[in-house]
Length: 321
Image (cartoon, rainbow, N blue to C red; front, side):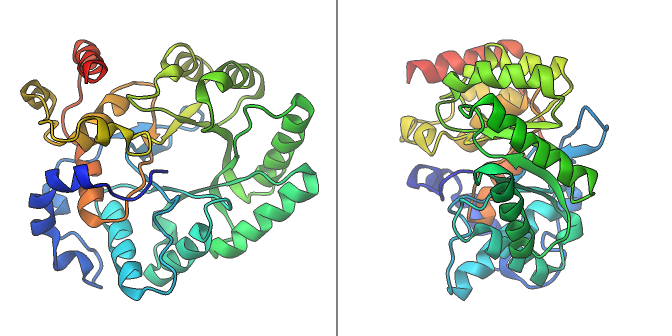
């Protein structure tokens, strides 16, 4: 759930831009004719079922705000096709992301791609009736009768009784077959929320948790990721670029030469590989609004990953920037 592209990343992706221009906006399906020649995108199993998901997906906050601009819409569709053609499937959205659900539902309908997508959305309206009503509206906007994942949004600071109500609603939808998996998210003041989320992981047997995790926000590493692994909870990571703060921090600096040891040739790959290399992470969901950015994100998940010593060096390097 990342803001649209920033200037620092543009400089590192000029080559990719030239490679995908023109063909990327074709209306033909599949989009990426050469995708089958690339290494497969890494997958990880959802602990509770063993279902495998590609480690790179898409967050939709901001990036689908295209209004009536048909050219922008065409680019967003090409970007989604790029994800799907390269083995990705996870697309995460929410009612609070403005027009994202409506636009995503329309685009997937036009592409006839709903069955290729692992579709995740959220609810946060207060009370049982509010939660039920909000999810019904999400289904209408997304033009689907079923979700793959339903998450209660930003649950870290609600009362226990409220949390119990929200989880009961999610479980009710799951029992009715409206969603296949349930979970909770938190993206505001992650460090403060971690203890509460750990408690929920241990008591609620959630399928998924979505948290903020990046090289600029590593508080989940202290304990939460280990508890997720111990409790069989899949982990989805939002804000992997810390709302572009990481790109700004390295503006004008080259990717270190030693990053080639794990095939990181751009800063985007560097930042994503750090997260993907953690064994508890199932999928990262950077937001992007361009084909070349999506290709760069995908590259992070289908080439070599840093080992523990290399991840430590990455932290030290970014800490010194």
